[in-house]
Image (cartoon, rainbow, N blue to C red; front, side):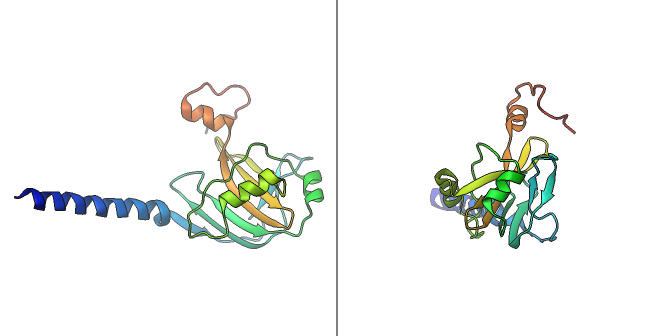
Length: 172
C-alpha cells in the first residue's frame, strides 16, 4: 500500500471521527424539556429555605443525561425584581455556562454582561439538586429569565478529591 493511500485513509478516518464527536457533543445528548406549568422554574424561599415554583411564561429548556451541568432554560416572568429580592435567596458567584449555538434564547456572554452590569440578578433555584450541583436562575429587570446549573463548593471538593467538610450534605 502506498503512503498516499495510507495517509488519505488516516485523514478520512480522522475527519469522520471528528464529525461524530462534534455531533454527539453539540446535538446528540440534548433533548428538549417539556414544561409542566408547576415547577419549571423554582426559587428558594428566604423564609422556608425550600424551593418553590414561580409564575412564568414562554418556557423553553434543554437538558442532557451526559452531564449534570448541561441544563439550560429561558423564560419570562411578570414578577418584579423588588418582590423577588424580598422573597427569594440570592446566589453569589454564578457564571452562565455556554449553551449549544442552536439554543438561541440562551446567550451566556450576554447574560453574564447583564449580571455584571446589575440589570440581571441571580437567585438560588435549588441547592444540591444533585450532589455538588446547584440550579441557579438569573432574572433581568425586564422580566427575561435564564436557568443553568453550577458546580458548588462541595462539588468542586468532591471532584478534585479534597475532604468535603461539615457544610456538605451526605453523598447518596
